[in-house]
Image 1 (cartoon, rainbow, N blue to C red):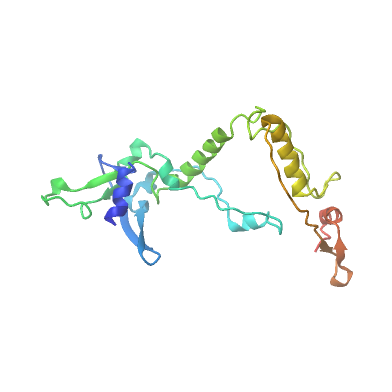
Image 2: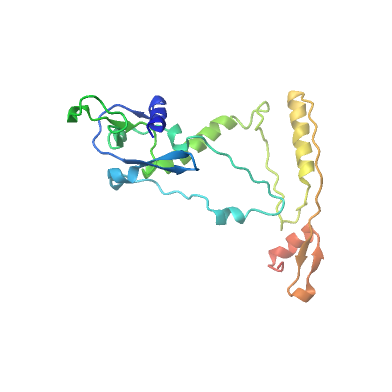
Length: 231
C-alpha cells in the first residue's frame, strides 16, 4: 500500500497543502498477488456543495443498437484517466488524505500528522466524470487539428451519406472505401501503401411470417425496413 501511494505522490497527484476535509482511502485485492488503491471522495462531504452539468454516458444498450456482424470493436484505455486533469485549487483543500499510518514520523504528536491533498480529479467527486469527458473532447479536437487543411491526415472536405433506406443507398464494401482513402493519402503524401480486403456478402431474411420469409439483398432489405417489414 505504501508503494502504491508513493508512486502517486511522486507523480504529483497528491502533494502537501492545506487540508480541511479528508477522503477515505483503502486497498482492495487485484488478482492474486497485487492490490488496487481506492480513494473514496464521497466521504469528504464535498459533493453536497457541488453542482455539475448533466451529460449522458454511453451504456451497453446504446452500443449494441449500432453493432452488427461486420462491426469491429476496440478497447481504447486512457491511462490514469481522472489523473490527467487538474483539480481546481479551491477544491483541493477538501480532498485530503491521511498518510500518517503509511509515512509515520519519529514524533507522534498531532503537529506531525501527515495530511496531504489531491491535485488531480479524484474518484468519488461529482465533477470528475464531467471534467474528464469534457477534457477528452477538447483534447481530441486539438489532436485532429484543422480538418480543412489538406496536409492533415484527418482532413475531409465533404460528407457522403450512404444510409439504408435512402434512394441512393449502395452497400459498398469496406475495401472500396479503404482503397479510396488510401489513394487520397497517396496523392497528398506520396506514400506507397498497399491494402487488401475481402467482400463479404450480406443476406437478410425478410417476411411478415415465417412461411413467407426468404433471402434478399441488403438494398432490398434496407428499403423494406423503412416500412417495418423486415423481421
